[in-house]
Structure formats: structure tokens, C-alpha cells
Amino acid sequence: MKLIHTIPVFLGFFAATQLAPAQTASFYYGVGTATNSSSNQQIDTFSTGNPYTTPKMGGLFSDLGANFMFSKHFGVGGDLSWRDTSAAYAGLNYRPFFYNFDGIYEPLKTKRAEPEFRLGLGGVSVRYSYNQQFCDKFTGCSTSNEFLESSHHFQTHAAAAVRLYATDHVFIRPAFDFHYVDNFFQFGHNWVPEYSVGVGYTFGSRE
Image (tube, rainbow, N blue to C red; front, side, top):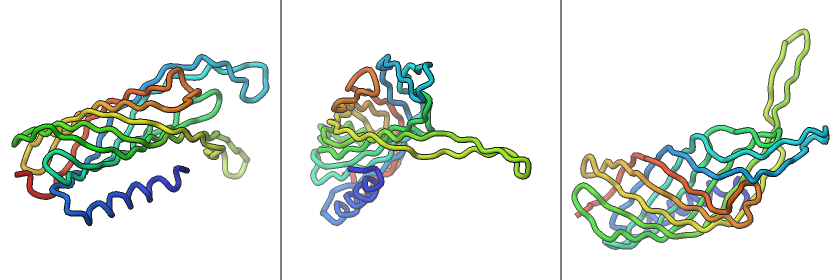
């Protein structure tokens, strides 16, 4: 699935699910990081005879998601996370996007805490671009970022998180996500751990 189609599907999933008789609906936004080692490939991107070594994955990531609980313990949800800025990759720039749709199990509920476990499927899109600089004596120099291509991968997803409620509806959400990405040859491993802390809001009664 191309990334340009991912966000509408992601939001459409949420909208359709809201029509169901869900007991609660929670939305959250967080920040964190996803990590992976370098594949240690040597890539001569521009055929200059000076190859680049592929980088590690890291940096600041944003995380956007929602949960819809149909019963006290079971529900569904979706999550979209992405690197906030582009990073260098073998002479180019890259940005990874992770998206997934999950089943959710919440083993217990208290006034101040609701742990959740998620398991699902999704995809990863790695977008590549190139910075070009143009200069002339009339306008000076400017830089443009030109999209080149993207690489798409299937992923399985698992996560553990807890919603810590500051009020009856506002929560803080520390989370650990585990992405297993099929044939993720751009980096050193197929598995990608992600760590984040978010804030969110729950609609509906939590009783």
C-alpha cells in the first residue's frame, strides 16, 4: 500500500469504527524513537568511486494512534509513526513511516491505569529524496528537496503500553512497540524496537 493512500485509510478506519457501539474511544499523540543498526552496506550512489556506508536508524519519531474498546477487555486500534525529519542515507535523505492495525487486549482497569497489549499487521514505507542547490547572481542560492522513490515492506506489530490517567479522561501513555519488517535490507535487522511517551484523551465512560 502506498503511503499516499495510508493516511486516508487510517483515518477512515477510525471514522468507521466510531459508528460501532464502542464502550470507549481513545486518541493519543506521542514522541519517541525507533532504532535499528546499520546494514554496513557500501553503496556508491553517484558512481564516483567513493561509496557511502549505510546509517543506523534513530532520531525523533512522532506517534499517532487510537483505541476502540468494544468490551471491557477487547478492542481494535491503529497506529502511525514516522521520523519527524529526513536523515542522511548513502548520499540521499530518507524518512521511514510505520503503520499498523491491531487487536487489543486490556487485562484490567483501575481508576488511574489501564494496561494494553496489541498485536497486528501493517506496513513500512521508506521514502528517499535528494537535496539540490541552485544559485544565480540575481536571486542567490536556494535548496530544494526532490522526492526520488520509496520502498515498501510488510510488517507484523506487537506493543505493550499503559494509559496513566491524570483525570477521568486525560492520560499519559508510555509504550514499547516491536515491528518485525519483512526483508528490511536497508538496515541491519528485520526487527525494529520503538519507544514513545504520549498524551491522549478517552471518550466515553470508563466505569
